[in-house]
Length: 110
Image (tube, rainbow, N blue to C red):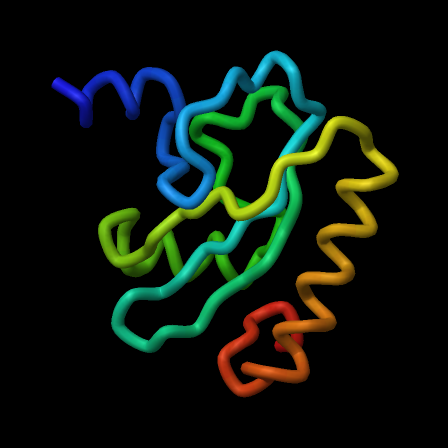
């Protein structure tokens, strides 16, 4: 039952790191899509508009999803933002942090 509720509420997005929240109170979120087999990942941002089945603006990520299927990836919301400016800053900050720590796994750099 919880899985069905979670899917209907949050679509493909795993919100475990954030817990339950009312997305109507936020502008958008920063996310991480991870390829399970390799650990490679992509950091992006998305407004809470047409977001439940959104994958990525990255052609590379969308091609990988097309080739390998949704089940080969995790889709995680990692940070919530109440406005566009903070969301953009949050995405850039997260990418820069991951560039230092995990550059070899970050798809954003490909």
